[in-house]
Picture 1 (cartoon, rainbow over the protein chains, first blue to last red):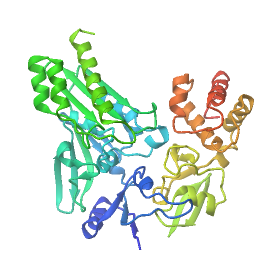
Picture 2 (picture 1 turned 90 degrees about the vertical axis):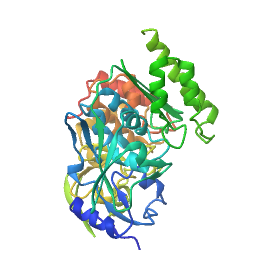
Picture 3 (picture 1 turned 45 degrees about the vertical axis):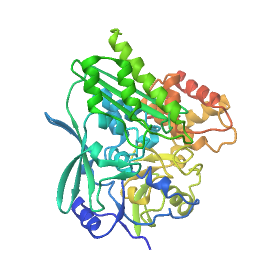
Picture 4 (picture 1 turned 120 degrees about the horizontal axis):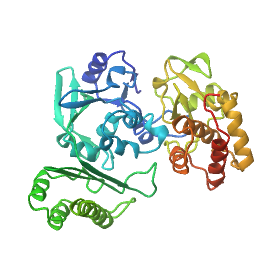
Length: 271
Length: 157
């Protein structure tokens, strides 16, 4: 027997999560598909469910001098329509299709932690952090420490991801390319996200490995020598994907590295 | 449990679990069969409707997320002038063949004009990217949208 709860406050939800292991149900665009069942039948849930999508206090985007603070229930459509910088909005604009973007949440894409989650490369590149709240308190965790692997995160079963924190910093240029079998409503074969400044570069690659590829040492190294081939070799050494139904290891790696090369060559020649 | 919401401009109450899909409740409890089930995973758009004026896939919406909200299905939308304009354009362009995708397609076309009052072909493709049609090859549907654009379609009529 599966119990479902729709608690009236975050505190009440945390109390339930502290008692038992539950599915936390926000928009449901991943969960409903994973538990799909015949028409008319109940979905195949195997754990109790806590519904949280009605918590309006988690639907805001705020900004102070240090962080953009994004509530975990902000939808992808909210992100696209927001005043956030274009380089933050763009990956969300290219995710799925309009009706799904009206439902799917920022927090859901992170907690689901699919290797193809399109919001993760940008969050890695921006050194984003997540706030995890439980009855014991709140902890702040860097995104790369939060995502442990495909569908695996650091979240304890009594914790709720309440906010994403993105450091506020201007960038002079960005590049984002998502490749899939079609232009919309598609899971990525790979994605490349690059942010540039006079004195900084950030490169994140999604959907090639189980988790996003990014390496601060190689980025700083590139800034000192500006040698694209060395950078490509370095990033190649981090790639350990597999062939699957969406693409092959070889295609993903070559195209990701070529996209990086193309963009950086353009930057170097002042295009 | 009893779930209260507003359905096609009427307050309704229905016995349902929290996790049951809005799509199933509409079809089985209210006999509103204009909303179709295609893929059951948010890809095909046959189940599109409006919840609080937002276009959503009802195959992915649990009743827990409908409580206190306002749902508009194709049955209520079909009584508007906006719908009549879309229907005329679809008929003129031959945009309906088997008809299974049509209710969802109509809802998505309406949403498209809410987002882009005078949509380019790129906008149309983006706006209808969540709707699959296996009959028309899409061109007749794009033609219908173009007819609507030329005719100055107003989503608020």
